[in-house]
Image (cartoon, rainbow, N blue to C red; front, side, top):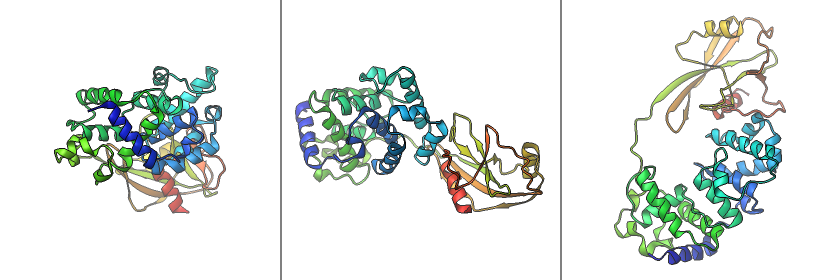
Length: 348
């Protein structure tokens, strides 16, 4: 395989069919590309576009992101999932501003030293913004390369990753790196798709080894699936006399880290006792609503929202650091876990 032929065919296809109107491409600044790359980790372009545009309307610069509270940043991220990405992005913005920098560093190694920026993300930023010849290896690129070279084995294994990185570096051209990087991602997203790939439209089909060996559908080799565990939780809906709902801030790490959620107990827990101990409330009734299924990458969570009525509305619960009364119409932006937001909307 000629490396030049590979990139030339890909660039020729990109000139005709590539995506050139994505919101982070104009203007193509380091800040905008960085935010888009973090959002695009494990998330499709079509999902990211609206989130990116709303995020940019509020945080239009590194400085504005750094100065914002974590709650507000998480609010604009809420629904995208994988919230550690957002927290790390916020940390990075603050680190750079504290260092007196008005922009991201231009070297891949310096970017990799920042929270939440791995090798491929760092390479995508410097390639897209400064046209530096750095190889990327996101999910779309892995799919294109494993099929074109008929590489079997789970792409998360060290041996396969090493092979793919070597291949990606060899194929990345010295010129038009930004276009090439976008081209190979676009090809994976729009032509060499996970299911029902459009091989007849692929500029690399002539020497695609998986196509020749009739094993396109087998690649990339999936990770062996494990039985997805299931967990069940009860979310308590506690309202005060002003129709505000009690929220609690989750720990900074773990599921929905740093977001606001409803008080959470096990299904078998005694609600009366819990509310008495935690909030000094005497429960007079509790009503379960329809169970919600929420899918995480590593388990399924079944949530049973439960409305709690207590004896008197004398505001025994005082708002403090990790607790807050929340009304859907309040102006303060809070980062809410997606199911919590859905539960609150269903109540109104």
